[in-house]
Image (cartoon, rainbow over all chains, first blue to last red; front, side, top):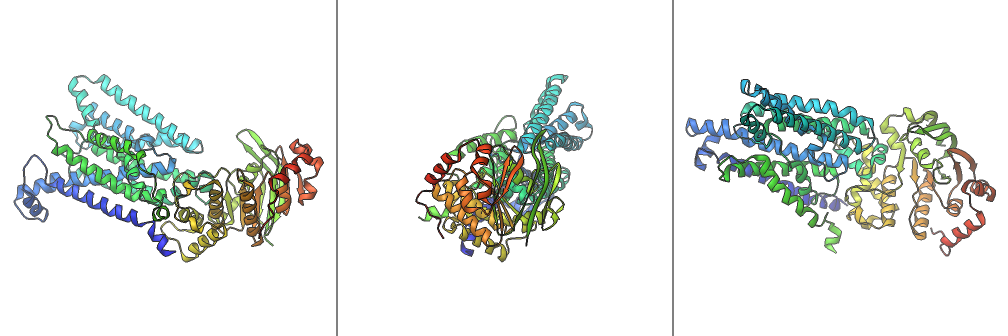
Length: 343
Length: 258
């Protein structure tokens, strides 16, 4: 019995370890990449507090926040995707579904459009977080009205559409092409030149968001047999939905605020790891977060390594990596059955 | 003796009245069959008993305690609910699926205790699904799936089992198997309330029948008293002669086992 209980978890543990190593490795490698060509040995020395002062500044003040943000934001996106897919019982759900990404982007666009971002650099991420919270406030009354995932999805679509319209309006009314391209480029996502200030803003919000999402893991398992069964098992689904959506909004809102709208990570990460789990949605959360962290770190590495005339944007790379993965997923057998493999 | 009492229950779904003044009593150790034509309100009654459907009037009590005022955790461990439809959204392994029945007893961070594991083993053994433990539940046949989901409900170890059409779309062998397993559950001290459609089956396995029609209780009592030819003709709009022949054909040559 005990052997069976642990046997089902082994592939998941192994996958978690692989993803963790991959994410940390990508983050470490990213510390060695940048416009200033610094040898790996000097980077390692700077990490340890040695080396010359300039190298230390570059590694600690410029590259380290960027690497940490890629890990944190990737993890939040992966975690959000897995939890929303569990909540909505829909493999196509991603953090964009609840409209937070769109609203956070609108907040950032407002900061860019009115020039607030130039006057006060943190105005952009702060307004983006505010946008995410406004979107959440608009979504919750809609989502609470009905039973089931449909009202949440419809509310999310409505909120997203409004945010999209707001962004389009800003592009439409932009006084000059430079303002248009500034907004358009920001929307494609980037982690370039993010500082510890950005990290200090995003990390606590991501921590709160992730904690809220993880606190509802058990309810996702109950929902595997439908809403009535979950409720009969004692879960208050309104409360579950409220806490989970708030967690996603806070965490993803902070992510978008710092990095821009980055697609596909939240959608793809759960699918990359689900095969190794025992099928319970709760068991996909942590591996999916690790996969998200690895994917985004890798993408942010590619942004810097691939030589292009104009800087390659993060959202573009994640889409190019994510879309093929998404196409390949249906081609793989869904879940491993140990008993069948043994037979 | 543990007792379920339903009194004067009115339930609306949206603006539509579904149950009106429904009342019945049941005791631990019984199988109570909820019967009646489609749309009579059987599913709504089962859902209202465990508070999945809010009642507009009336009350449900278990051992004298109002079910709607119970602590959600107490309610979740008092009533196990097996919905119709057998929906499984993710390919959980059978063991993990049965373990879901222990969720009401787990704290947010605690793992399954030995008592939980024992309950899961007992439920799986009772449903004869131990050999399926590591299979994804979504890959099972209809009969296996029915047994696995029933094992999930039994793993709750609730004194009341509410089963909505536990035998729907199963072949005669598996119908008898499920009913026999429900009989064992009742003999073990549970109250089983099951929505059933087969009249012969209900007569054979149920201690009492609650017959619903258009949201009201038409009759309540021993199967032979409730399912009289006249009443069946009135409620189901079919002739019992033809029906019992059909039932007899379905269960021909299949004596109850065990």
